[in-house]
Image (tube, rainbow, N blue to C red; front, side):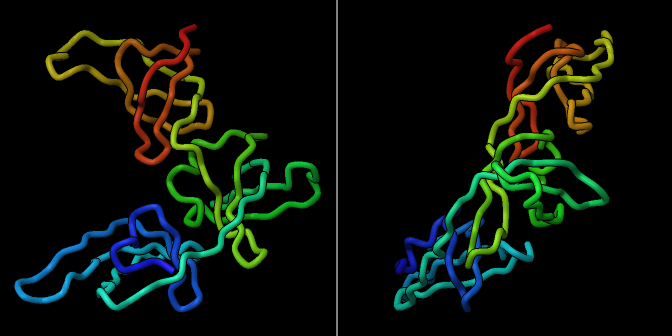
Length: 189
């Protein structure tokens, strides 16, 4: 059981028997009153975001999540398909909303950790940083670079992001999957 002030971001809690991920938590106190933890929670299965206040006397259970190794297969019409690591016939689908924004950086045959709740796969744990190959990068154009120049590049997954002017086609770049931003160049062509 978690006390009201132990409900922190990245924790997964059970609320009314449903798993919620804590996105944001802020403990504050108004004048002479007792402290309150104001949280923003995301329902892991539906993706719906709600706000919830936890008072000093309240306790909440931490969700019992386990992980299972899975392989990413492909994306089709907003659905992303996966299979068990050892058994390609054991396939399942998750919607793009369930996976979140990091799903656009997944490569076929990539091994990932699936989150399991009540023996049902409810989500995918995507690494925070991934290395991807640049498939398209327009040539750098001279101009106003006082604030640091950037250009749009296309990654091997088809995702378009902003990157510095020195990135070329064929380079390997590291991407932050939570923000969708360029981090650094790992290897140049």
